[in-house]
Image (cartoon, rainbow, N blue to C red; front, side):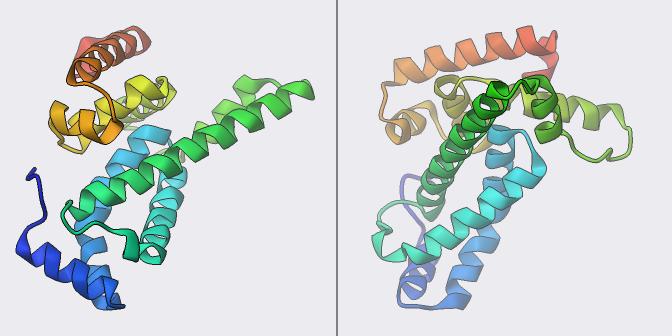
Amino acid sequence: MTDGPDEDERQLAAAARAGGRAAFDQLVRREKRPLYRFVRRYVGNADDAYDIVQDTFVSAWLALERYDSRQPFAFWLRAIALNKCRDHGRRQAVRRRFLTLFSLAPEALDEELLSEPELSGVADERRLRRLDQAIAALPRQYKEPLLLTLVSGLTQQQAARELGVSIKAVEMRMRRARERLRESLGSAADVE
């Protein structure tokens, strides 16, 4: 990953900022898959991830005048998506607390929120779903550096800059994230 946008991205971003829908659509096509992977791993649910990604693109379109063209467009989109994921997590926590007050089992709610239709019964798909859910369950301070580096491909230095923490903090949080994932999944092979 480069530190700044390439010339083609700069031109597309400038055209999008000037109201060019086609240019924005091209930027979206470039970034939708990596952004979706990042969000899905963050929230642990395909449907929620899809909604968050769509919301991210709408918010980006509406806020294009605030895009700093010295930064990669993906960096800016990921920051928006990260905030949307955090908002989603807060809403889910409030929902669980609310339902708990009314004596509904939070485990039943979690199962409903995290359930997905059976894909094909293949072991790899089940393992991926377990991994997604385990990552989504990580505390924010561990989940974010892990996803930024392993899923989005940022260096630890870039992740530290995006999160506003030191590189050492990123290293430590990633180590703890991996430890928790190993405990949760019972296998280091699923984490690497």
